[in-house]
Image 1 (cartoon, rainbow, N blue to C red):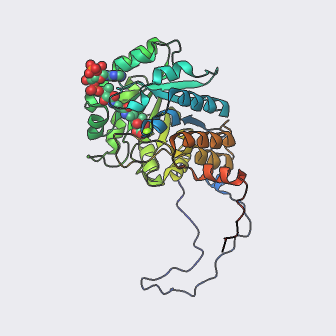
Image 2 (image 1 turned 30 degrees about the vertical axis):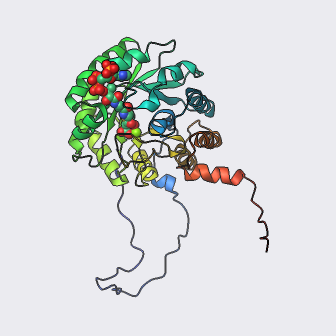
Image 3 (image 1 turned 180 degrees about the vertical axis):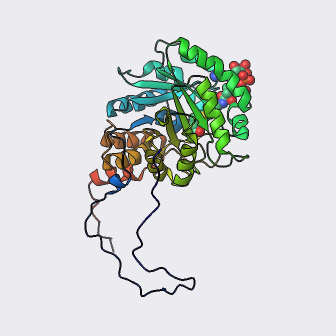
Length: 354
Ligand code: HMG
Ligand code: MG
């Protein structure tokens, strides 16, 4: 973990309590040379970052409008063509709880599987696991999801945190037996969901997932309340528990801090992020929380910082437009909107008829 330098040279006089300056106010300083860019300030940024596109799962699980399996298949195929190396395809959960994910078996079977791309699915228990491996195509990765908040655990998967780990242990054992990768997602890692989540709560779930031999542990801000300060504090706390290269981050953007949180995570050494096309997403059991940080926004940030992702931003913006047209809602991505708006011909103003 790299320390954040908090020192900065004083360039102007200090205002006193009553607002008057102790010394005569100086002019705004002019930077003589631009020897430092933000990139160099954030020194040791990674050359490459991996994006896990979660739009087909997290993005669609909370939509009111039903999306057909064919649309989901087209969406995922577009993600593959755009260059994502990791794509969440769906979840094998109860259709009574999350009806939008009911077709995940058909979707998994219907997509074009590209060699080298990791397609993953969420499974909460052995019933889900068995359904996920029943088809012709077995996903590369299983995702188990446990909460740092006791209240959210009961709300989301109808069992306590301790019970969920018992369920996950068999799923984890079987996943390894089948030679698949295993991801553990820690939900509600920040904030307050009926109970206050502490750093120790998160550490405990991380330690449990490590016991289960998870290849990657994903820290999720389910309700989207974290700020860069919280993120850096948590990652600093976790650094003795787990190598940073086994961690990934999943931010919802409820309070608009997603991009800032990604910067803080990059600074702490994280190189894998979940995001969702057009900022779709949300958990049906996390009321008030909005979508994931938008993939288009994350790609724009990373590419501008000189970090490679292997993903074509323009293709993702088009994919955003495709899925928004299907579900009939506005984009949650400023970057996606900007890219599309730039391409559209300017509307000529028509003189008003008098
Ligand atoms: P339950 O009702 O406690 O389960 O649900 P049960 O074992 O008592 O079984 C009840 C019925 O559900 C039975 O059917 C089971 O067969 C069936 P019946 O006999 O009554 O006809 N059932 C299942 N059906 C299909 N697939 C299954 C399955 N398991 C049982 N896997 C359960 C427990 C976990 C299934 C339920 O609570 C559930 O499905 N919850 C949904 C959780 C979910 O998908 N949440 C959203 C995803 S998590 C998320 O968004 C957060 C994340 O993005 C990160 C972040 O942002 O934090 C990952
Ligand atoms: Mg989520």
